[in-house]
Image (cartoon, rainbow, N blue to C red; front, side, top):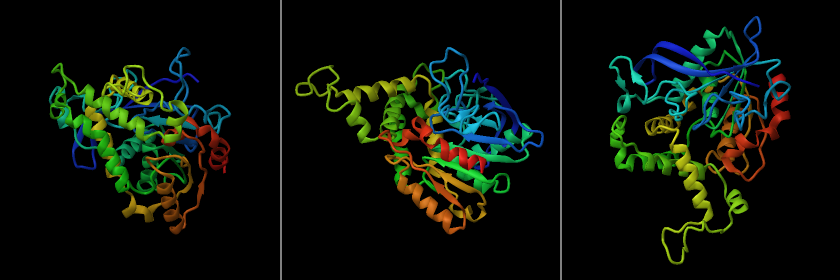
Amino acid sequence: MIVQKKTFRIPEFKLQSGSVLRDVAIGYETFGQLNADGTNAILICHFFSGTSHCAGRYRESDPEPGYWDAIIGPGKAIDTNKFFVISSDVLSNVNARVATVVSTGPSSINPQTGRVYGSSFPIVTITDFVDAQKKLVDSLGVTRLHAVCGPSMGALQTFEWTARYPEFFDRAMPVIGPGLSAEPYLISQLQQWCQPILDDPDFQNGDYYGTGREPLRGLAQAFKLITFTALHQNWANRLFGRRLAHDGDPLQKLNARFAIDKHLDEAGALRAQTCDANAVLRIARANQLFSIEDRKDRIRARFLMIPSATDLLMTPQMSARGATELRRLGRQVDVFTIEGDGGHLDGLNLIGQASEAIRAFISS
């Protein structure tokens, strides 16, 4: 599928914090056609470092399709011959330097001042992301969603939808999610991702735009940690073992690396080139703040929960606790566990394992 990035604008948007953003841009993509009564739409919510690009390619020459291309498309588990699929970028999307990412964030121009928001950009929450999505789907003529789905932070948004707009849909598919709230262990993991940015002198309290100094070292280290915690020891054993990076003898040089660290250093540095440090901090805080525990009685949807067996970040135990609580509330919950050695990232890379379970859930 060839897909086009589009832009939705909100003239004035009040955040959960009480702050108001004006002339808000939200990037989004769609697949398939909306039916006459506006009821065949499926919303896909993206993960922490993701975008709306969940399937297809922007051009034939793109080396890789969107992250869930294995299950979204004509004849696939989420069949775009039957369903109108919508996916949008969240506010403060971390990929601020990617040309196809247009959503308003800290590196955007504040229309009230004519200057970059920088440190003045407010805290955003999962609730804010969902409220913006609701405005988007309403603008597209959707009268009722058929389902809401998403991996990782997308699972948080899926849960938020079930409590925020319980009458608007009845199928929820959170993948590699933490359950009904961010548990303390996850909160601390997220803070560890942020700390290298905050400790980088070039961060300049978030006002580094136009100074010629940006916290790229801290941002690269943050993405090294993000990548590391999203994987599993079996992945490391299989791909790297105890091989050396060939940049010196670790018996002689303290800065000589093993192969796994060379890989993670390079992965972090690559991501730092396309992302924005302020946006990463705000997305991390949105994840830390997530909880629907006080609103869980509002939930009406039925669930297909898809954890990864080797997930060390949003562990299958967290997901199981969420499933138990939902069943206690009388909700129907089916579970499909992805098997692999890729940890949290198996929810992206191995989602095809769940194709038949997803197809049955979506079409039932």
